[in-house]
Length: 215
Length: 97
Image 1 (cartoon, chains in turn yellow, orange):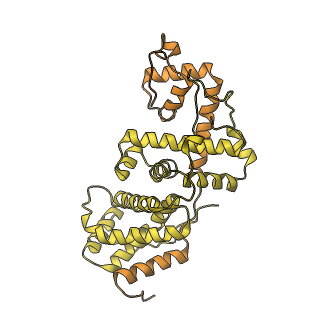
Image 2: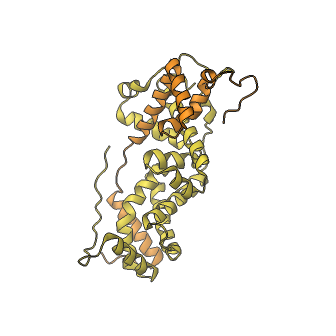
Image 3: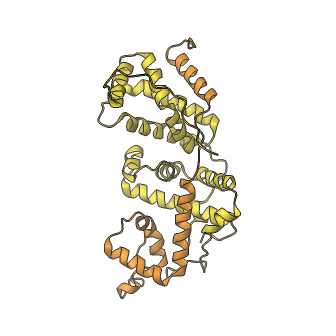
């Protein structure tokens, strides 16, 4: 599985006009109700929005609906964009929140207890199950790439929405903890706590898939 | 969050960090955010604890595996459907092409 290049085409710009100026001009036109400008904005950003949403939502049908919702929200809320941050940042935050709202509305068909996959410790602070095996190299040796990716995606789907959003934004998107906190309305310590718990859960799921204890 | 009881309170620096503490500190360790004193204690524990070395390795491997996930670009048909949907919803008319 690989990423294909974007098929979007940017309009040519007057000589000397930077991409930043171009974007600002586009935003002003959209704010003024210019639908062609809105479509240009859609073409420019839809590929990135799609990838961001799909990483959170995990299936194409719902992703399509969420992408629609994101751009409807862009059209509705563009007047609130004041330029204090880059437009891409504003759009990223908007997308994260629309996707998170969708995740929260999902009915969870099975209850996965996070604690079942988190490490456990004895009263003296040692790992409950010893020795702890280093199964890291076995991931590549025993699992096909697609199988491993499927396992990770399934595990991510079993996380609570906010935990999933944090780990996707951090480890799949490479977003800083500070920006994740701003996007999701969390303090940095809260982001780190959720990230750590999500990673430990993911680790536990991988351990179990290889026949090891998550502890 | 790791709470110390009076029974667990360390008597010396060498016994300050347990495997449970190490697990709680791993995120800050891999990003280099531990304060120098805690980082020293963390590394000192690792030198003596094969369980934590193994745990750290599997933690890092997990993060790396997640970072390696690959995703496709938006399918062309979906892009067209979304564009048509937006035009219909916002403008109330289909695109001319």
